Length: 407
Image 1 (cartoon, rainbow, N blue to C red):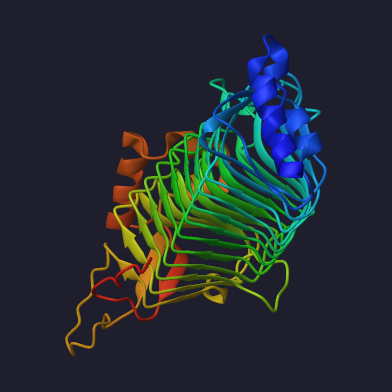
Image 2: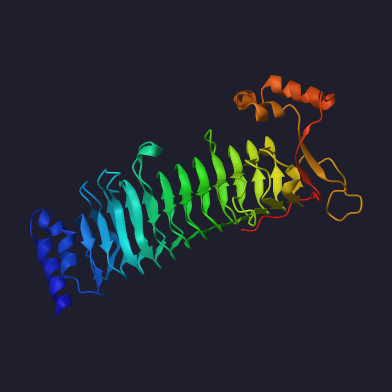
């Protein structure tokens, strides 16, 4: 009888003139907990609140319009599914986090939805054991800093964010949210594709990040696994493929980082017993392939491929460069031979700084990097050194051929 009443109510609402026929909240208020509510095709007015477990389906034919006020759809219940909806036209308040979906609860499933013309996209606050997948998310057409986050996690854990198409947003922000996994997402034309803050044991794998100011940045986030991602064209002045700050025990493996201002940027791990480990990454066509700063040490780089970077590695800080471990990497400027045919060079690959020491020791001169003057000074310093060059790194077993990157 309850379902018959709902269908009768739907018929009645669609028969009445005016705005009453578009009110989504009326449908939600009469839905039974645990039911499946399949909305008839059409446009429904929000904002609306789901306060009980249910499934809301639109089959790609339902538009929910927020009317330019607040958040289009708010979830305050466990075991809620949103599927096949088009959510649009949220409010404009950054303080109130106006957006398409604001959710609290556990066991949520948000899939196959289209989100556009909103400030924020999907916000999960204290959401656990939930899945967000196959959604299309767009913020508003404004400067990146004026947009909202396309996806936002806050004090949420055990969630999976998979195969979403996200463009023209500000950031994806993951704050105080450990043990989440981000897989197979495509993120374009944004500021920070992933921004992790105090979010330990995050897994970021097989995402495609292109034309963002920064690909992945992590602050105070331990035990990260960054694997199999493709990060392209982060070419803003401070653009970085992967940036790690005050983060240790991070594994960066099988990534392609191409055409960025900095490929990988990291300080030294805060915990002396943990390491930042870089394994089998392709680092190519960047201004600086890897940039380490702070006290030297705490990094392990094995089997990476360096191709056509303007500067393959820059390390600025105090300490012994041999405290970092470099082994089995491929360097396109290695000048040795492999006479015994074991695949490794006969002598170590040493990366030395000649005239580059000027901008390393006096940062304001960095503006003249790659200028004709610097190139001439560097040439003369290599030809007839005025003083001993500075050792940046030593790879004791450089590879003659690169490893294939596995994704």
